[in-house]
Image (cartoon, rainbow, N blue to C red; front, side):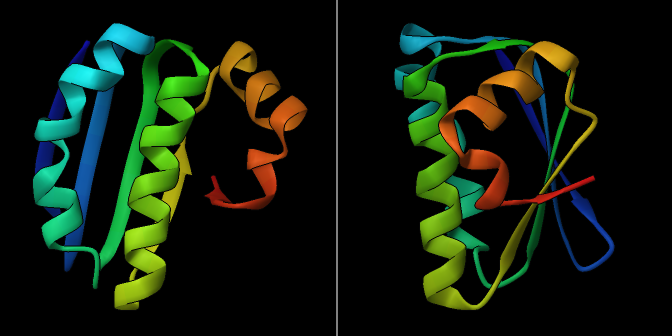
Length: 100
């Protein structure tokens, strides 16, 4: 799992590449710290290269969402594959995020 974080129009863009399974989610906990530190801004998560997401990966995204809700930011998730979108639909996470 590779997470690239860059600045984007007054916010941050996190590009997820690979599989966000349990092992990757544990490792990614430290990598997402810049997102949590900037949770007062818009955080866009690009899932175009995300192949798979587990419940641990969903928990990681929920952590980001909770932090932005507390600090006044927002999370936008874009470019989900059909497989990832199906996980979001089945779990109800589709209703927790702005999806593009």
